[in-house]
Length: 116
Ligand SMILES: [Zn+2]
Image (tube, rainbow, N blue to C red; front, side, top):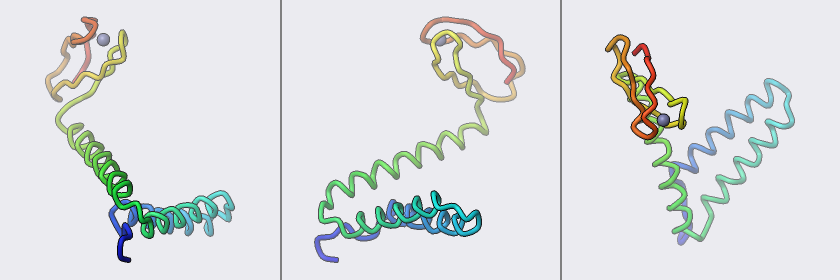
């Protein structure tokens, strides 16, 4: 495995997800799921044996950043409610358990009353 990317978090995640999809393809007798699992396994092997280590490390970094952002958003939902402004689509974060509040959009200034 010299000068190869080797096993990283993205490889492991794609491989495990592919195995799960493969098992599901057996359960549901779905050829689509079978091919999806096949492509996933080939992709994780490609990543593992790739010689372009810099590109694979960059992809792995983006993969880890995406999941840490999703985890952060998920954790934030315990303490905040997130509303979408009907005027401009901006996401507005408001602390939970404050009763009815009037929320003013910081972008377009539109006001709306929400229960938190
Ligand atoms: Zn707005």
